[in-house]
Image 1 (cartoon, helix red, strand yellow):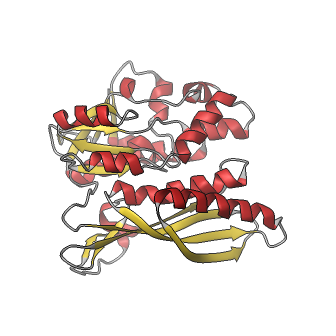
Image 2: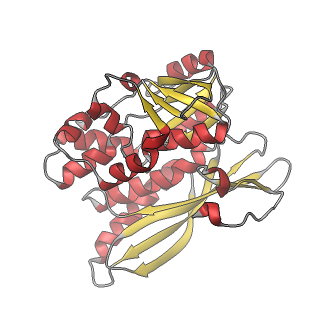
Length: 314
């Protein structure tokens, strides 16, 4: 749909919607630009405080993915008018707690009466115009580093069906609550060529956007991709969310899959993530050092010259 919209030229728009990047960037001066993003969704955990905190972490992630520093936010709330207002209060408190951790001020927001609960934030950050980490800069020869484990989508579905283990739920919740602040700060010490965060379109979907924007092919070693405890078991049990199927239907034509890869593992490459990690493209030596600095980071592949398809799963 976005592809059908006319482009409005503005020399101060440094990153717009045309490259499917994580956030927009608008230049204010030669030294300062704004990073802007918005994200909200329905509850994915039962505890309202935790839901609010996860929604905040997820909303902040796009600013970190650009290499920016979040400074302010506006909340977006949809809540049933006749429901328990204490639940809404806990959601807001959870979001406030996470925004405080990020050093990001909440300036206000907007709420509507809606039978289905939804919550999130519009976040504004700052960045130097010359230091933007867009998803279009990956270069052949780069290594790919990923900073979190995947599997929140299938574990969330398993939770709804009552078949997720306590360990799996705890690990997924901890991952979703984790800010990408430390990962952003760690990567900025190195020569990062491209970055994106892995959220609703899954690892394969967001990697496709990076590959197409950079005119390269990304090779992902599926055996090196870190998985949350219980993620494979959730797939084996058939806890596959509709979003995963949609991702695979849309992205699958852009993916070449090597013979012999376990099918359940391939499925997880399309799993929609909430508050997922950063996928970073940078020189191989820098990637090794980044993985030392950031204990959660793993090398999961490499960038090669553009081939037949933008993604290759090995």
